[in-house]
Length: 136
Length: 272
Image 1: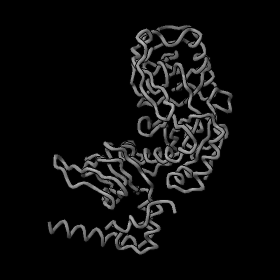
Image 2: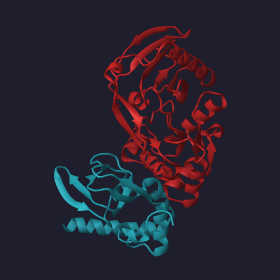
Image 3: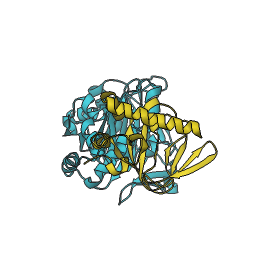
Image 4: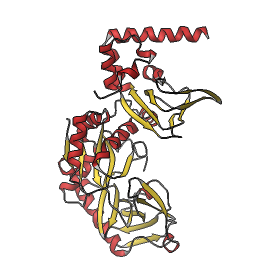
């Protein structure tokens, strides 16, 4: 099947409430994207419209001047940009050759708008993130 | 439509993008366009998604093209009069074989969906899903290449403005060199020749990709176009105006003594 591996997406909290069929729908919308070592993946402050799941390799994360824990296989970033069309909150750089699967606003929005189940599960997932952020 | 067509059959800009359709029109008019194929936005989407049937269709139809290949974006709303996507969408020169096309097409799809491209689209009021066609053409190994305006873009004067440099034209388009500058009147008389500073030339590498080569010292400030070549360009400008209308922005290359048209578009307000 074209798209992202299901096993990879199962690790992504944003999709953790989706059942297998829904996950397969989402997976088909992902496209492979490769970055060379040293390449800037996303830049803090720029507009953003894609969400990425790391499939292989490592990426460094910097917010302002602060280094954050690196991203590795199974990690994800940029999901909020799918929803609010907002600015990137961090700079992500490929620390090694990096294999990601990406999902853009353009594929994601019709999927969510067309499925109440996916939309509700996304809300639940985001609510969990919000509670976790408030608890920090 | 999930289509791949010879360039000369690309007619619908909403399917193949404006660059492919412009080159298709040039091909049908007998202008000297390198051979190529046009990929519709839908098949580009399918190839970028890794759909095997789409990939094999593109590879099969590219197999008859002389190698290596140049792979360029042709977005439906690219290069319009209101907005220029120059610099936003990727061009991949020197793709060594059709088997590497899928990766090249995917990279171009992502370039149209990158953060910078999306930010640009928002800024110019085009926050809509990009439809990205792709043009695959044989890559020339030019002695000299560059750009030409059929009307002076600075003051609107009825004269050709030509800029050229050694090797692939990307050195001129990307501003890697100070190109030679020429003005030629409508009758083909050269009005001005200003040597540039052409310290590097971009050349194709045997295994794929390109490299910046140092230009021999004697060629750095030597004019890259002679009167005969300026005449050829002047005739090309006239033919392009006959096909497309006035005020065109042309990319050209001369390889083995033959002049080729690589792109012909309307001059945009934002320039190159």
